Amino acid sequence: MISGSRKIRYISTLRLRKLVRDSTDFHTWGIELLKIKLTDEWDDVSKHALRILAEACMSPINLDALISFSPDVSALEKHSDGRHLLLRMVGREEGLKYLTLVGWMATSLREWKEYKNLDYVARVEHALHKAMTSVIKRTGLGFSIVSDEGVNLPPHLYGELCKTEQGCDILFKSGDFQQLLDKLQVVDVSRPALTSYSDEDRIELGGMTDRQWSQLHRRSILWALAQVGSSDVGYTFLKSHYPIQNFINFASE
Image (cartoon, rainbow, N blue to C red; front, side, top):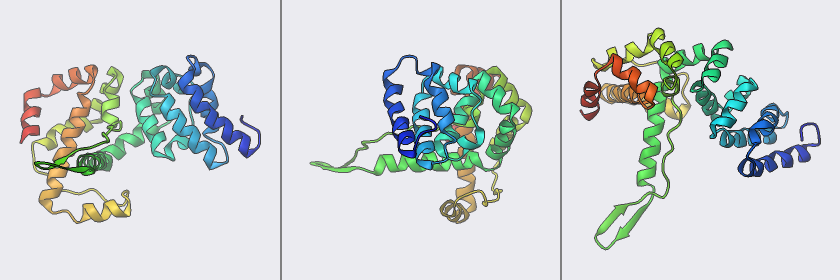
């Protein structure tokens, strides 16, 4: 499965998808195999291994197994499925320890502060708009909007961090949480450098008026704070530092 021909490695990888769904002890042997396949020299093998691993790690026991094998962060960073896995690892105590140890956490905190919070809300709102308007069916009374696909919210760094008390402590000590609260009180039209965005996003964001930019900026803060309070631990943390009613008032404006 690991050292055979390309065809054998590819077919054996696809076989693991069925085993993920059928096996009750996949975490004891299958996760390690997929973790090794992430660094396969053939892209078709590594990409499919990552997709299967992302599906498998929807189960906490499989996610914990992956963390125990100290996966190659650079291999996971190559694709969105892998980046989402890294974020989900943050929500587990051992995953947070590992990602802090290898330096990934410090880099990610800086990136989310600089531009990924904005990127997150822009992408989620685009997906929500697309889902709500993608299917229009004519009825006897006119038009009704019907969506045949939902929107699964991708993991958010602050939401995952605040699933554990250790993560809440990291976010608080970074100063980023307090900065969110401070900026919520003012109209901010300052713009981050757009060099980290795709050409399409750069054109769209660069063409915004100051008012549009300010509104997006505020929504990104509200989304981030909502993510902080999306777990029991995070809600307790949020409530201890900020009146929830104030948050509701801002969100309803």
